[in-house]
Length: 178
Image (cartoon, rainbow, N blue to C red):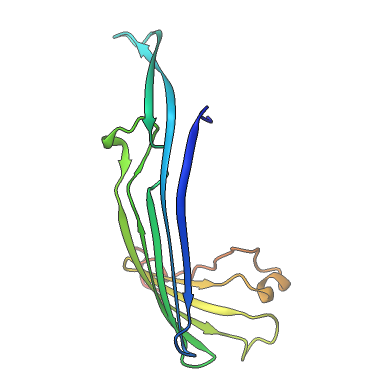
């Protein structure tokens, strides 16, 4: 449900550098102040037998909106010494966020940081249509083979934009493939 009065004010920074022909750096950050002036929450009340007895209205003032972290940042580096292979690292930090509009510290997501590594192989040497690429990502100990959404897969009707091909051996919880 939408709230009557809220504001979101912030600053966003996006920086891209290519210090050498083979190295690309990208950083972005968003810092914001997000507040809801007044949030009304109706809470149903039940008796000991489970019968509804009515509702209680609680009013919260000057609270952060749900799922709106104050700070998000990304930093990545890609190194491609040739035309076929690119290696990269990507880090992401997200500050804590509320799971509801009450500003209750017990109902908040923790801040987190992820660091992922990836390798991308350009397949255009072997596949003549589009710009097909194979991307291997290593995130939190998981291995995943992904085909990037490119014209070749759309033309071949194998995928829609955003489609990911998962290799059957990509899940560490599965038995090994033979």
